[in-house]
Image (cartoon, rainbow, N blue to C red; front, side, top):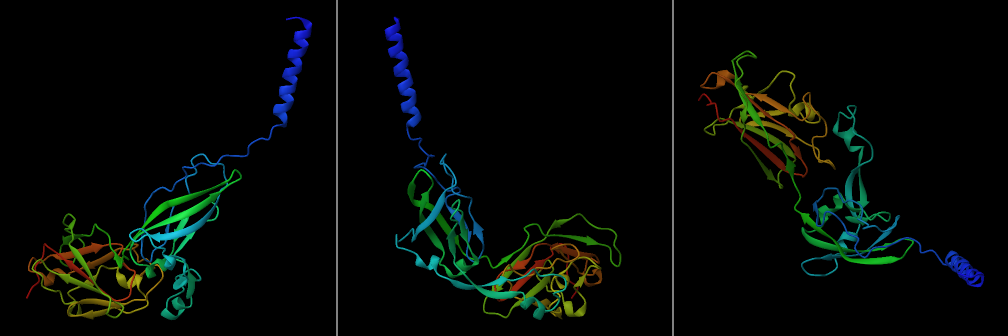
Length: 317
């Protein structure tokens, strides 16, 4: 290459470098394929449910997300009820051991306005509140608008929301029972599965009832001492200091307070464990029966009857 051509070549390289250096640098990236996961988002009426943030598919953060619409998937019509305010029970302070009366607990509960569905402006997290108790079950879908430094995208049908019926109570799926020697803490049998059923009468008073049956369905008489607690082990009375236990011919009964996150909220000596005993003098087998179950909690008003049937024993007539 002669000197003339060499000078021309170097001049062109320098010009291109200056031109490239002056070119506007593109800011960020925004994808056409952002999404929510999981989709559908499954929520229960009256419970708090929160999604993960919007998956950005490589889009530059941060992103700003705006809820555009909520629709009923079955009809395609708008569902404005998700965006209305409803009054719901909320705690205004933590319940402590010092709150030993109904009056003290009620001081920490108040009615506050709440919207059933919101979408976080930063990140796009979907939040469903306790106000969803006012929304009909079914399938819904939302549209959102997503923006960042690069631009804006509209995500139609961004996430499906499946709203399932309210759960009125919860109880552990692994209750058990043992048998043991009369009048002593000896001779315990191996643990066996304990059949339990729970019924809910929404029209009844706020009451929890425990019934204990033998293998034939005969009811043990709590008023006559046929159902007792087990020393200092956990039981419902420890978890419910607000109402005294009432012993009847058909079981044990307590009133309860309807609370924002369900009742009871206090633990007993064994956490959420309910430990009871049918003394052996009331069974034909002359053995104590020791039913145990955990995590019983109610989330609605009404009467809840917990029926515990112990397969290994027979009540003395």
